[in-house]
Length: 262
Length: 145
Image (cartoon, rainbow over all chains, first blue to last red; front, side):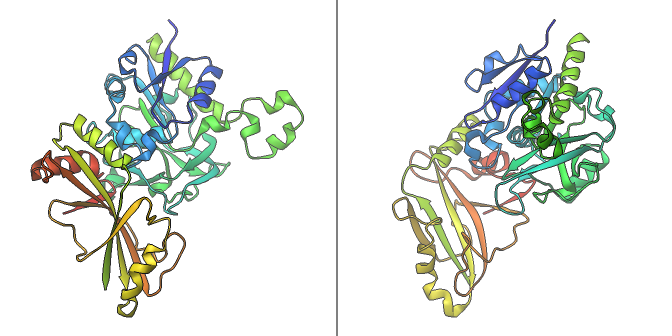
């Protein structure tokens, strides 16, 4: 049985095609499902909420989408143990939907990816480091301890914000999945001022992951920012070779396949 | 001293309509949603008189073709109105990159009013539910009534 992944598209989503391309590149069967077709979602084995500006970020980033009817089957799937990955705006939606950190229940958010400390949209190349044990993130099956993933942090609302006691719980209960780091894995201050330097949150069961930077935008060498891109210049095959971000999707694919096999 | 300005759209407010649609989905009996941006300026008394004209010249805040600019007499919400603010907001000293004469602090709120068919504020319990479930994320925002 081939696992099926839905890339959920809201009005205002803008990263669905590169997300789909990354999923296809790691061998997953994936397709776009638009907000107008919530009834078609139940048949999928996993869901990816890509980046963009769902509903123009009206009210708050992710807030309107969190209540969209298309999120009902996603939430039901998450509760049933299906894998749900949110990237950037998708991460904001998962936080607004209360799926991450998920400490108070559905649509009862206890944390948010709030406006950047700078008050501005920022787009910077970053690395993120896994800071929980790999067993806490079965959605990234086979990921190694302390894995460092490159990506692009491109958002105006990526600053983790929560009351102090909730931040303590996020750490103590292992919801802080990724922090910003340098390429060698040393934690660095979040470019958006996020509490805990948080770049990604995971729920208690480890099947729902919200990550702010875009690994799908560093999936190919030409998208990467270091010497490898310069070295590949003029060599088409090298330029189009997978980059570090694709590893993220390889782990996700392994998890999706493993879940379907189980 | 604090001077308070409300900026609202005179063209259709898509954000307010989106809020209305989501609230309808949540069963909140609002027939109309009215949204405004509230700007609170801490200003030196000697600069207060010219503040309104200074604010009216900030085109990213107020465009007379799109907005209505009203100076409020109070720095608190009107009856029936809810202001949503960031919990950790630090007052800014510039707005749209500009410093205003005599202004030492600028804070922003989003004002919401939920009206019924007759144009009256909906009941407090429905309003509180709208705020608690959707209009305000308590993780980083606070609702002021």
